[in-house]
Amino acid sequence: MKPSSKDARAAARARDAQVGLPARRAAAELLAAVLHKKQPLDDILGRSLDRGFMFDLPARDRAFTRAIVAASLRRKGQLDEVLGTFLERGMPERSGTLYPILLSAAAQLIYLETPPHAAIDLAVRLAQYDPRATRYAKLVNAVLRRVAGEGKAIASRLDAARINTPDWLWSRWVSFWGKERAQKIAEAHLVEPPLDLTVKSDAALWAETLSGRVLPTGGSVRLLPKGRIEALPGFDEGAWWVQDVAATLPATLLGDVAGMRVADLCAAPGGKTAQLAVAGASVAAVDSSKTRLSLLGENLARLGLAAETVHADAATWQPEESFDAVLLDAPCSSTGTIRRHPDIPYIKSPKDIAGLAALQARLLDNTAKLLKPGGRLVYSTCSLEPEEGEAQIAALLTRNEALSLEPVTEAELFGQTDWIEPSGCLRTFPYDLTLDSPEWSGMDGFFAARLVRAG
Image (tube, rainbow, N blue to C red; front, side):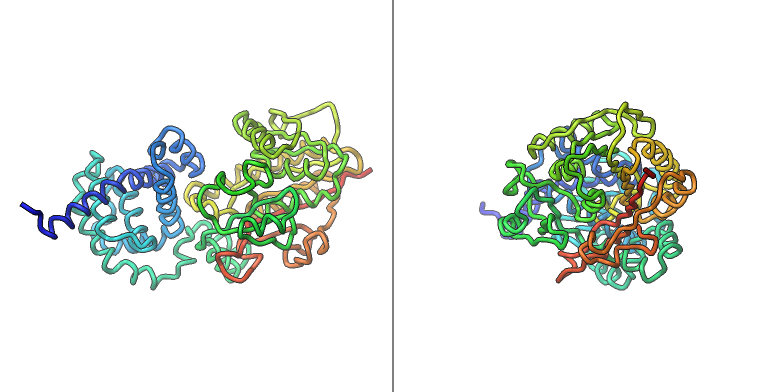
């Protein structure tokens, strides 16, 4: 008996659902690790690709998993508001992965244009796989059907920038930077960032080859992300490395380092070490993590660059030599990189910032001891929090009279006067570097200060 068209459609839907299940399961597990266990997304992504839920996924499904997770985190405030509208009794407690399943399915329905039947059917199936969520399978179906019908309208009525920014960050940014600037920061976080590459030479050629554009700094090429980075022309040849344009600025503030002995502290994964090596410096790259230091070595080998690698704690490291220049890109809250890392608002807290600020102070005190008389120190963080930037330098100058601040100049920043604070320090925001569309615009939020030791 020939199956009816209705039966054929049902069979096709079942096949489609089964094909998409592993990717969605991986997304729910990744979200659970971020939101429930406060684990950094990059770390768990790496583990998932090596031996976890993403290990056997084809490239297309891996990309879809990442897209689901990114949309779920980037738009979490709006998604929570939509789900809350239809969860009359709130989110059930002790329900396993129910929340990540609902969150990721809502992201698919509202922001990823996923066919409703696929998103809903697979969310129900995922709930049935979890012993603690299975009794809520009917709830998943009912809620997501309403999300499919009304979710976009509800989400569009909300102030996206404000509601997708957790209260603890919003209040800090309004207090430090003012409401207008806080709004611009939060709006920048809603747009998937472009991909920036630092090229060893001939930026114009690589911009043409990669269908990108040369940024005002001259050494960076920007392109819109497409597929695996490792598959792009120039990767295997070591012609470039991935590095946000803002992250390239601290190393340039050391000036002409050709022939100088330079220490790059907290150096992994090695973008700034590579910059210094290309510029002709003899670099000691220091990091406290053997794993990250190994990654730095691999990156340098691909690029065909050389540097001495040192496994040490930069807060206590006491080498026998002194250095002409030191670059300290210190561990920080990374709130300037939320565009690229939308998990940060959900794994960090004010308590973390206080702890990191204390570590940064110890690092600065030890770093100052490594300089030769007349030597330069550049301190930087990818943080928007003044405790990790402006306040650190003010306190350091009070503690150490041998150091003085050397202001950054307009010429060093390619005419970008807005990036220079009245104090002479560098400060960029995620909404800076406006090009012809939001997709091509923006940069990481960075702070950097340049100091000189008395001769």
